Length: 140
Image (cartoon, rainbow, N blue to C red):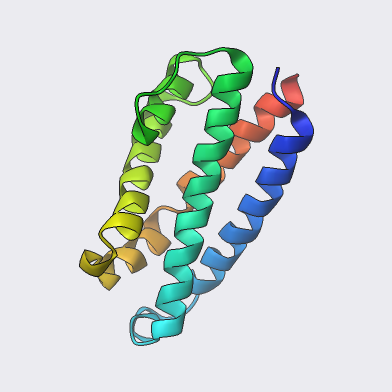
């Protein structure tokens, strides 16, 4: 069974990271792209927000006795197979995980425009994951 206190605590952290990212998204694109500190902060907040989603997903998988994921991207697929998230959201989660992997492991090749694009187009997906995780906790 999912530990509601643990997931709730992780969701609170996730909301904080998401709030930081939303704040960066309000900065005009050209200003943001020319501000190294804002870029670095956004990258870090993306890494920890996506990592938080992966950690919650892994907690759910372990707690519910679901099949072990083969890698981080498979966490999204296992959650979809279990009905925790839709297949569509799982595909977007996989894309986020790939983005996180690029930020962590290929940081020297990350295009700052891509970071801005994620700020403009993908924050809602992180919010949808948080909502799905919160619904699961509430249902137990």
